[in-house]
Image (cartoon, one colour):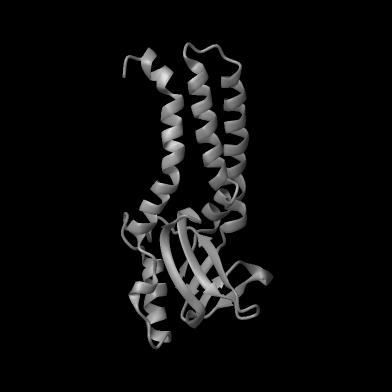
Length: 191
């Protein structure tokens, strides 16, 4: 049986977004009123990057769940709100998905509504194997093989494809930040 780390999940769900939102907000307001040579572009670049990070951070409290994978299925949530997803209803499990680039995403079919839903969860550092597949994801996929008659590994989105998609989604923001920083780079003689 594998379980997502409760303390880390709660920290990333409730504390981390508050730190980023308020800490970044203070940094943006502090920078905005400073007189930095060539700093207008730097200020715009920082604000653009901060807003891009906020787009992902604001989702965290709504997306991250505590997940426990056992022989009977995957349990989502804790206590009375716990919901069991059988392996037959899991559609895929993947890392670095654009819906949760900080963890693992699982898509499943909800038996009550017959609608596909996604849940994001974090993996314990003991289960991680670098950029490779972690032990919990492997356990879920192995159980899917046992419970789904026509299981095929190709149903899971590629981790590399997910990372490339994330990069391509971020590319316009990266280019905008670089554009705003052109005056700042000129002052540093990096051009």
